[in-house]
Image: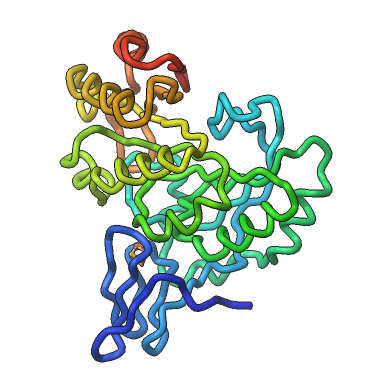
Length: 290
Ligand code: SF4
């Protein structure tokens, strides 16, 4: 199968389509792609071009996702594709996330059944993690795999930027056990300028995941001069405690120069200082890349 009709789109005048999967709500002309570069308007129908296309399939420790409070000593079959609905200047996976239109069709083909069979065939495997690139833009394939995985008693995990609309997330929640959401900053201007997105939908997604009692861990990458204001960080951890609970797991991660971002690495002292601030509000705070 080359591609599949996408979920969550509506037909508009002149064969245009509106994609309702993520908050960008792209209006796409015939022959054009959405911002994620993997969803294409083909003669008035939105097609998901990366359905059954995988860039990576491999075993990882669950801890590495990172998920520290969700079967951390188990291994998980990790799968990913290409494309992303954000465009972070500091993306660590820009080789697969920031792609050109049409590149999705060039990847190796995998079926739902083959991924499920691979996951079941591995000893001590917890289940399947959707990771590497942003799984939201791979929604249809992720959804089909996750549904089947639940029937086979496999655990499912989504490692995501949380930039997804409520309806598709609500439809996915019954089939997803755990999430790590990358909360990039508690600052909408940061999201607009450095990630090409916005903050409120990410907060909405986290609240929805929490309300559905799914396991949720949060990652925050601290970038010098961009999101390292202690007061802003304190507002963020206060929000997490208030809206998601003090048991929410927070991973504070140290930045290193990558992709289009070349400010120096985050000083270790900043990370330790932020850990102390976070621990005033949250019970489970960890440091990454230290
Ligand atoms: S998923 Fe892709 S096409 Fe759809 S609204 Fe988001 S960026 Fe646009």
